[in-house]
Every structure is written in structure tokens, then in C-alpha cells.
Image (cartoon, rainbow, N blue to C red; front, side):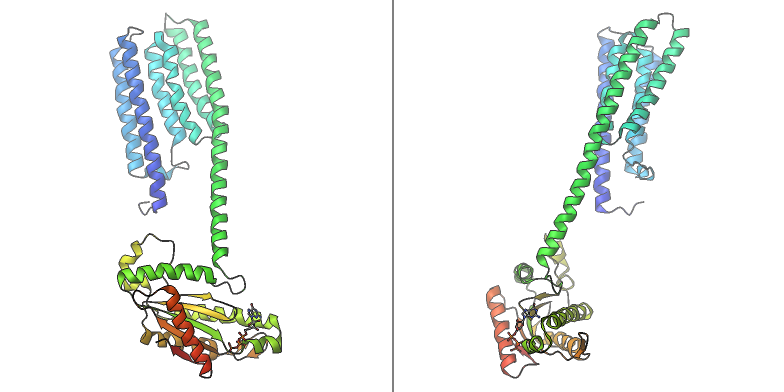
Length: 384
Ligand SMILES: Nc1nc2c(ncn2[C@@H]2O[C@H](COP(=O)(O)OP(=O)(O)OP(=O)(O)O)[C@@H](O)[C@H]2O)c(=O)[nH]1
């Protein structure tokens, strides 16, 4: 129960704030009742008054403990709305009983309590809570009819019907409001999911499902800023499939597409397995950065048959072993597309130099790749 996520804790805070609102309402009601007494609008027996005040303290202490110790989470509705309304309505009944002369005024106290239901209850729940409250009230009237000499049956019945109508109206209206709230919540969740999907789609290459170029540039820009701040090395590799045009020409575009997909998948798998130092391992404090960009190695489709790889925390000499593993991932086993096909690549690697622009870094990697191609392909070249 105590291992709450930050989202759960956020919800608990909202619930506790609502409880504090309810506590304020209790206090205001006590003040209002006190004023009624001071203005001579009614009289109350001292025992009933102290029962009223004392029960306020007990009720609110119990609810405060429930929320602070997270005991409320054991209930189906952790905000305890129905329970809180019922308890405060029963509490209000003490005054309905104790201050019969000011009863029409006292019944007004119930309205704020029932308003809380609009935040949570549906119409049925509302009607149930209102019904229970009215049952208590009816029970009191029944008792008064026999034991209270000053009881005015017609007036009290009229008041009861009026009060029932108000509660019923609140139940229907409140149910509608909470339905709108639930609908709004559902729509918000749907919208969040749609946004996530759009973000994912706008950052992903349709064919290979790795990052697309736009997203790669975005992440790299962010990375550059962090690398500058924390003096963290990182390298980028531009990887280009050798003689890809030939694959297309000989086997068709569909086979070419399959090769691209398998190529990207192998690069991504290999990166995942490679013990490339993650930026956050290198500098744990980076984790605090306020960013939605993950600081991990990644592969992106940079152009047609060209891929970009980010190696965080990796300097030029160390990038060799990472590239070696990529080479093994691609070259050791033939691609089955669906017939076996040996695929090779050339790569140009550049380590980020403090202060240089992203354009410059990519240009150096591109030059190294160009050299690798010119030197016969199937090789890795490092930028100067
Ligand atoms: N099937 C397929 N082919 C693509 C795609 N994007 C680009 N290409 C092809 O990739 C080929 C790239 O050819 P080149 O730039 O000449 O490169 P290459 O044949 O790999 O030669 P080197 O890079 O010099 O080894 C072109 O034929 C493009 O049509 C794609 O999404 N699917």
C-alpha cells in the first residue's frame, strides 16, 4: 500500500485537499449554528451542542487518519465521497434534531455536503445517499411525532417534501455533472493516447520502425547540449549498406525493403545488447534533466539505405568495438529475404568535439563514410 507511484500520490493529494474542503464546510456550519444560537433563532440543549461539536472533531480526525495513512485506498471509491456525504448528513441530523425552531435554516447546511457528490457519484449512487439521509430524517420526524409536544406535523411534512425534492434534484443534476466529468476524463485519456501515437509516428520511420531522420536530429541537438554541459564524450556513426542499388536492381524493391527492415532490426538489437555506456550511467545527474528525450544509444534511418547510430559516452577508440559488434550482427548470418543474401556496410564514425555544431559533426561522419566507400567499402573509417 505504501509503494505508491507519483501519480497515486498526486491523486491522494487531491483527495486530501477535498477532505480539507469538507473540513472547512464543517467549521463554517459550526460557526453558522453558533450564530443562529447567538441571534436567538433557536435554542439547543448543551449536551446536544457538545455532541455536535465533539462529533465534528472525531469524524474529521478519523477521515484525516484514513487519508494520511492511505487506508482509503482499501475502498472501492478511494475518495470516500459517498461515505463522507453520509457521515456529514448524519452529523447534520444532530442539529436538525437539536434546533427544531431553526430547522429550515439547518437544512440548508446539507446542500454543500451533497454538492461534493457532483465530483464523484452517479445518479443511482446519489439517489441512494440522498435516500439514506432522508430515511434518517423521516425516522427523526416519526419519533418527534410521538415524543415532541411542539411537533407541527403539517409544517414538518411540507419541509420534508421540499427537502426531498431539493435532494432529488441535486441527485439528478449531480449525476449529470459527474457523467460529464467522467466523459471528459475518458476523452482526455483518449486524447493523451492519440497524442502519444502521433508523437511516436512522427518520430518513427514507417518502413524500418526505427527513429526517422527528423527525430534523430532532434535527439542529437539535445544530446549536444548535454554533452557540452557535462563534458561527456559521444560518437555518431553513419552506416550505409554497400551496393544496395544492386540488391534493388537484381531482386526488386520489395526485397530491398526487406533488407532495409532486417538491417535496421539487427542494428537495433545489436545496440541493445552492446554494453554501450548510456549517458545516464556516465553522468547519473543527467537523469534530472527536464527532457522527454531518452539519453540512450539509438539507431535512426538517416536516408534511403543510410542509418545513423548514436553512441553515448563512447569516444572514438571505444566506438570501434561497438562497430565491430554491429558488423558481426549484420555480416555473420546471411539475410533471408526469403533467400539468403549477404549484406555488407560501410561506416564513418565521428566523436563529438566540444563546441562544434551538429552540422559539423555530421559532416565529419559523412566524410569518413565517403572515405570508407572510396577505400573499397565493407569497412569503418574514423573522422579526423
Ligand atoms: N527498396 C528500397 N530502395 C531504396 C529505398 N530508399 C532508397 N532506395 C534505393 O537505394 C539505392 C541507393 O543507391 P546508391 O546511392 O547508388 O548506393 P549503393 O548502390 O548502395 O552504392 P554504395 O552506397 O556506393 O555502395 C537507390 O537505388 C535507391 O532507389 C527504399 O526505401 N526501399
